[in-house]
Length: 364
Ligand SMILES: *Cc1c(COP(=O)(O)O)cnc(C)c1O
Image (tube, rainbow, N blue to C red):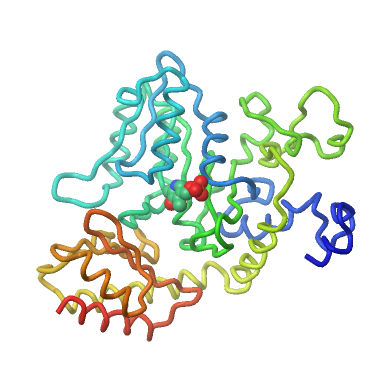
């Protein structure tokens, strides 16, 4: 803010962090969070915008290969993006979109069933798109296996990291993911409407054959201000940028990323496993025969982040209102799920215990 007041437009060059290069300052931290090279990540736009940009590049349906596989009950915005992209290509979503549902009586998808569905559709499959951590159930999908199966089927593999970013460590580069997108206002705490981001694997980075929607900020930065005809993309994911960087949002994003750098995602994960395990243990001690509720989220540590989704058997909304009144910030999802997420960055074991007491009282 001081640089803006003192420098005005000159801040593009002379600010402490020159605005012209603002997208660079978050790269190291983002690369560490998603397990990528700095050339593979960039912060830009908002999540849904980025999803559309990625679909332009990675969903290129042909007469025979046009199907998309995704999880049933995906976040609404992702559903709308996919539906509208299919229609944009004159494909009926009822035919082009395959939404995988858990087996009857189960709440989450089995990896073997996902891999089988991919293989079953291998002649027609163009893209596999999954939430890395499913927002409703909290299931952390097996990214590596899904990407491998997608590639064996001749399709691209993309992931929405909205609920994974800052929650679980990721290895997108070695897992051979083609692209990923995220927002930063959930676990990344960078403030309302904060900067979103994109990962594109380096194997695509200099593939100038991939179709893309272009803007001047993706153009070769050495010649950007010559304002000449003919788009020449920058190498790497930077070549997908459209517009100049929203520096104010970027500043709060950097402030948050600094904390993640200090804490380290691996350390956060260690605490997270214990904290969430403690919560699960306490919840089960209240209702070990699942009379009042069931935890939808997988019990296997490697298949979840810090979120537990509690499926209420009755009076769910009443219980939710009671715990909210008592000062708990949880999340209500229709028709009957309470999501709770003890976040390792700032939640304590004592707070988890206090939640348990409040929740138990609300049930009674
Ligand atoms: C939060 C969330 C979004 C939100 O999209 P915006 O474009 O940031 O508004 C999209 N997808 C998923 C899976 C989310 O969890």
